[in-house]
Length: 144
Image 1 (cartoon, rainbow, N blue to C red):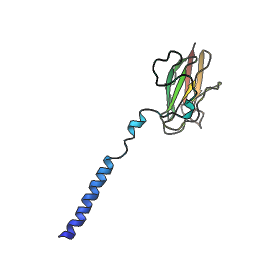
Image 2 (spheres, rainbow, N blue to C red):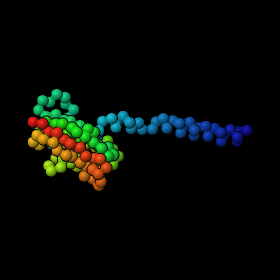
Image 3 (spheres, one colour):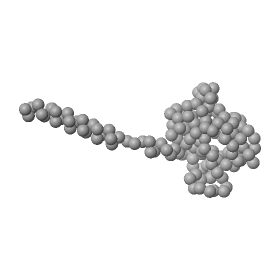
Image 4 (cartoon, one colour):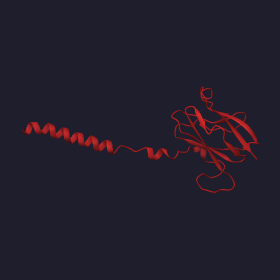
């Protein structure tokens, strides 16, 4: 009888350990609520996360496969854009005809870029592969 109980006991112990291990699995969801920042964030205009800074403010644009949200943001000249890649693939934001652009950002990364542009409308795209052709385009409106 003890021979028969030993394998059953081992199976029960292993099953219990598997359930415990599954319950202890990493809950990574809590870290995805806040984007990580890349080193490019340092040296950008204004501080992020410090509340009512009257000098410069940050607007956020998120990137996913294959869109920007919002795709038609409006900012004041001198403000900054917080660009967050919520997708799985690398993406970037490049304002055509200007030097306003992010690096290629991996999923979960972000970068703050200064928008030192004259008032007007500017087209922006993701320059990686055919991402722009797949819909990663938008219009940035800069106000004085």
